[in-house]
Length: 127
Image 1: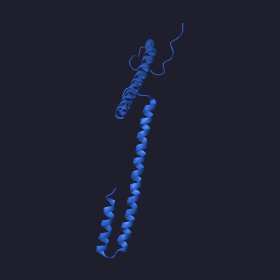
Image 2: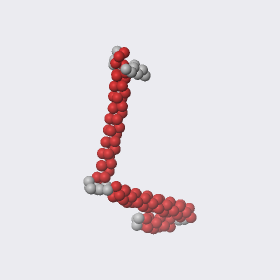
Image 3: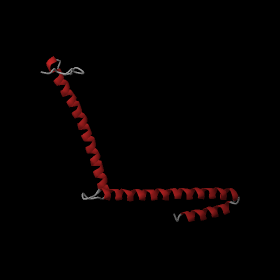
Image 4: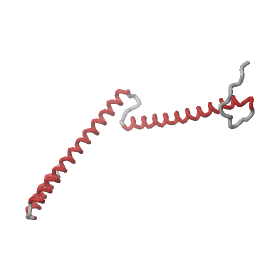
């Protein structure tokens, strides 16, 4: 008959020598269970978030991975175009600002300056 293996650390609930090994195994099992339950909870939350995201994208319960990828690609393309449009607008406004500074510096007459600035502002309303 074999011997009971040595226990790495004493169990916290039982100090009875014949049951130390069983208790230590039980504690290892319970520790592992709590870690696994936490992992299951984390994955369940991620799954719920992904399901919510799919609902936001307007997908029904009948979807494929390719459909989701295509929808996300469309959204990404739209965001890239929107970002590029915003960047172009900033560049255009920066050019206008430089133009205004030049006009202000080069125009000593306030009446002339007002006319030029009003014409630029009226052009800007088209955006």
